[in-house]
Image (cartoon, rainbow, N blue to C red; front, top):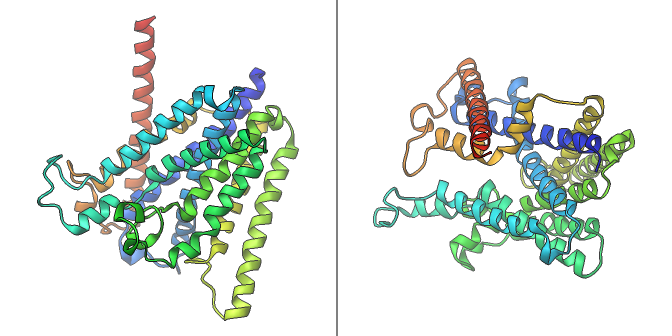
Length: 364
């Protein structure tokens, strides 16, 4: 790989990751603090924020799948000897562990006598960290299947993603809590209280694997604007399919569930994610470098996620801002707090980077 292609790739991937993590931080902050008096779709600014809030998770998940698969396929070794597999398994365990730790129901570690049923429900519910962990696991399984059956990654990953997307509505119609233990039901549908069940959300992680595999196998793709056009065309295709499906739903049933339970929303979000990727890939062709902080933010998404959630929502060991200001601030106060949270996370990442750099110098 040439230094130029490597540089382009880093710019492209890290810009998307930085955008996703900053969007996530401000989204959570505003959601916790903004008063209900201002949560009105008649306000254009809130309407736009609400739309982008809904796009944050798909962007974040798609980027996670892209990065993991890119690194996996960049190593030209069989599945069993690929060092990224061992790292992926460790990442899976870490993400799932942290996901449950953030929702741990008691500060006493082993005394569960005072834990309520509602607190247990919260503990068993599935959030982004669980989801990305299992998304990585499914990507590794899909990569193994593709390698052993001598199939293209694109085919296996696409089919896997479509399975998670396609089973969303059928799984949502089943009361899984009556069939399987609650901690398993949390991975299968929203009815258990989960924010991000595997169906459909794992599909976005695996869909990102399609792009990640392509990037690893075509290291010079960023040197051509054709790549950006193809991403834009793919994104437009999914958006058109989603909007067409919504039009058919309106024609047949006289109502639309597009923004709630419709599978058309899944495809629409995937299309928007691809369109955003096309824009970022186009920008990466026009610049040779980006500020180092964007790269650092993209590489520290897990740390930023855990720290800012602990500050906002608290944990079993500390209260969060939600206990003091839950949906009580006006627009300007909320915006100021969101900016402060982003600034705090940025400073934290810079300090950590400087600490690591000095530690390496001492070791040398």
